[in-house]
Image (cartoon, rainbow, N blue to C red; front, side):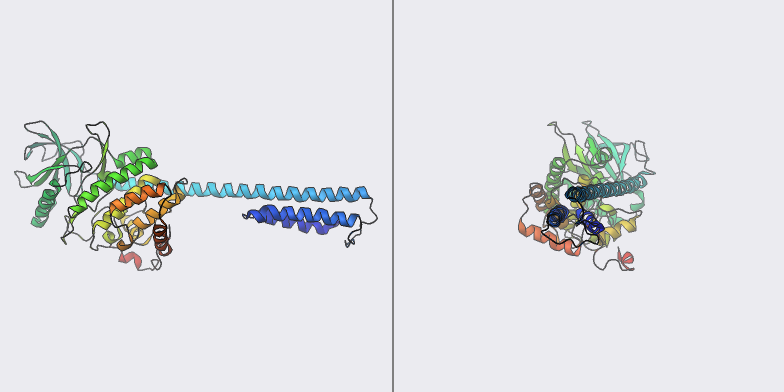
Length: 442
């Protein structure tokens, strides 16, 4: 107890003091110090033989007590140093993780902005075009205000009442396709019947004098969700719950009519001014929508939609139903809540690969204060297999509200954990790292 062999105790205290286990980090060093003091006292007063390499029996009592106190102090300081070192290491690791997440978020937002920029290039927003001045039914076409999945969108004014509207024209390169023209008019006629406070109202459908089909609809005033996210980064949890409820109401009306939207994304969700003074969330642009009872689509191609917000079955060109909108709604809410897209990449094939084969980062790893149950709601909504998802958008919205209150049921938690066992957060699906997987997307 009074020899260099005590150094071994110091090393042991430092090793166990850095453990993340509180029992090891606190009680083992305390046990070592206490045991040493007890053993040293026994040696000092003859209660235990002195088996040191160099006997301390000839030393005076004061030297014994001084040595014992010095060793005990060193052990205590070593334990404290181990705790400080462990805390500093954890802080450093956390800062490194936060920096990595911030870097990933920045890359994801940059990629998303680049996609929007690519779509905007060449669009003469705020300028007249060859169709400006023509009549679309009772509406006189003005300047271009945007571009949709199927064509240009103009601001228009009613000839008699002066009411403003938005008029979408089918792109000129699609006019030669009689099936697309017919499909555009048929979808527009269906959308006229979809009256709901959270849906942009379609007024009329027809053809211009030159034969170009048009769709006249409500012109909302306010800003789309994409603009708000560019300015704010994300929305607060109460705002996300309000958005979720509005989307569920709107899409339930759409799905009840047998229509699948298929292009739900921030730019197609509008925070519109209302007569009551309280803005309303509105869903717009059914340019790539699909009738549940039909097999063709408005764009008549294998893959339609926006890569970062489409469902895995869309990305693979498979048949879709309302469960694709559930996946898209969850992807949109993920982006709105966490401040970063769920699926990112430098190009469309990479994004589509992630959609089909990879789960995004756990939401609570990005937003630390998020209740764990919210992760589980997103796990079900983002399931790669449509059969594993929520049965309706309303069920998703209701579950999200319950999860925020940490009241998700045991059965739903088990269901989510079952999905996560085969599709862990932030990891490719089992077997998806095959070299041929990239070629199978779409």
